[in-house]
Image 1 (cartoon, rainbow, N blue to C red):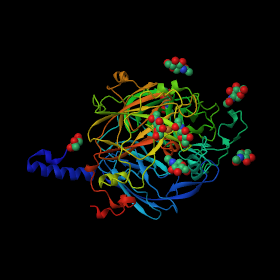
Image 2: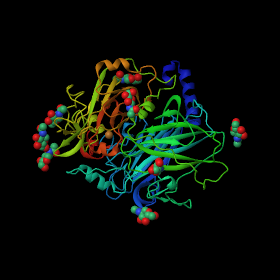
Image 3: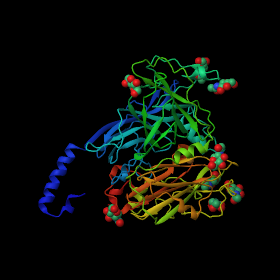
Image 4: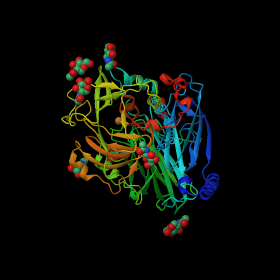
Length: 575
Ligand SMILES: *[C@@H]1O[C@H](CO)[C@@H](O)[C@H](O)[C@H]1NC(C)=O
Ligand SMILES: *[C@@H]1O[C@H](CO)[C@@H](O)[C@H](O)[C@H]1NC(C)=O
Ligand SMILES: *[C@@H]1O[C@H](CO)[C@@H](O)[C@H](O)[C@H]1NC(C)=O
Ligand SMILES: *[C@@H]1O[C@H](CO)[C@@H](O)[C@H](O)[C@H]1NC(C)=O
Ligand SMILES: *[C@@H]1O[C@H](CO)[C@@H](O)[C@H](O)[C@H]1NC(C)=O
Ligand SMILES: *[C@@H]1O[C@H](CO)[C@@H](O)[C@H](O)[C@H]1NC(C)=O
Ligand SMILES: *[C@@H]1O[C@H](CO)[C@@H](O)[C@H](O)[C@H]1NC(C)=O
Ligand SMILES: *[C@@H]1O[C@H](CO)[C@@H](O)[C@H](O)[C@H]1NC(C)=O
Ligand SMILES: [Cu+2]
């Protein structure tokens, strides 16, 4: 509520004084100075070069309160690459230039340069940040961003303590080599990750649970200070802990289980959900959850925390750490076998979990109808013989000038002015490989009228190979969307009748299952240019994304530093 709507001058004055006091008591600016550089790290017990921030991997955790302003002075200390950082799950209301997407919201920050990210974290929740240029996320540029409730607010659940669990996957092949392989003809796929990491720590070529493995893998031995030693979760008995779980994997879909303990899911992507209990939880790249865990087990003092691969035939050992009850020592490993991940292709299990997520009562409800429906067909294609992913037959290649600047300044030659289609030929058979796999590159965008309600139907299909359809977690920048429903096969008009308009969860990432569709609804109320893409890093690199532009003429003055490249490099002449 703005002070002006109060009418009387005296009231406006007191309202103003009050809001000053309020601001000084409550929200504040939190300043960070970060340097991004390559560092040596033994995150899976072998030494690699990884992208670090201030010498740390993963990057430092940002902790703020809802309403705070986060200010990050980011200096690029890489020698030959630009860099940007995306604040995943933060909507950037009024600051679309701080979204950290190269070629979309800003120019990449050059080596030696500093860029200031300044934005408000308006909603409490568990978020992540990560590189959004080339495949720098795969190179290790990521960390956690946690927003606590404002001082005067309360979470709708109680807990005594909390832990942060950030999941990622790691390859021994360098990211440069991965990028070259993905773009090559013949195509060279990156394969499955060598190691899964929990908070940037994993064990390659040894296992904490070696004695339960039939493969001749050796027992990991740690003194405790190794960079790959697992972080043990030390807990007290009879308490409730909040685990903040986020996945920033490049590829792997994951499943988490904690031996002997149920988890009660209470938050998804910064939105409260109707609490429900699970034995294990699926998490896709770009998603976050909070679960509550009650330390009420008596059979032992040490329990396995296990993370395994879903949706792709796993060739990566599960990641392990330990839940240790105070005051016993964690040096004794659990005597039982770690929880086994459900079979990788048990999609029923995954769907059952995904479909149990509903918004907490009292959460914002979706508009009853939509103004526009965009159906996005996800296909794997070929362009000039190279393998790509296409959306409505267009494989996204970003232009050199960021859309935010080129649209705001009407630079029509900056990108293809023709929009990609809202749908494609309804006769397309999603159950079979494409009859004609040829596709085209494109950098056209979807222009969306401000304040309209948009339905997106993500339609999965068969990939190039017969009987293959993959999982894709889609992430939207600048908004949360309601997930109205999931379905099998091709979306049909009558499926709309089955949409959940009562308590659909609000999220920023939603998965499409093989040969299925997922229906999303969002209100385009945030002027800016926003990426919407598969969060699997190699898939995005291969073109699996689209761009939405909404109300760009309402965007405030864009900081000059965000646009110092391409056709907007001399934009001072355009003002
Ligand atoms: C894996 O471990 C074994 C035994 O500890 C060692 O001989 C081997 O060299 C290791 N392999 C790699 C790739 O590090
Ligand atoms: C090891 O092999 C035995 C016998 O083949 C099997 O019963 C058991 O499940 C295997 N254990 C693991 C961890 O794979
Ligand atoms: C935990 O709760 C159980 C059952 O309520 C009780 O028997 C036990 O003494 C409690 N333990 C601690 C450490 O509080
Ligand atoms: C999965 O669920 C479907 C529909 O309920 C059922 O037809 C199918 O048999 C299930 N598949 C497995 C592997 O349980
Ligand atoms: C395909 O390759 C040819 C020959 O290298 C090149 O001239 C053409 O521009 C390429 N087409 C696309 C769409 O990249
Ligand atoms: C697809 O493109 C290739 C050249 O890249 C061409 O040889 C082939 O005939 C095209 N297929 C169809 C069905 O147009
Ligand atoms: C996709 O685009 C290519 C190249 O323009 C074309 O040959 C093909 O027919 C299109 N496929 C579909 C399903 O529209
Ligand atoms: C869009 O909605 C916002 C808030 O609901 C309002 O302030 C703004 O004037 C609207 N803009 C347009 C162009 O309708
Ligand atoms: Cu994908």
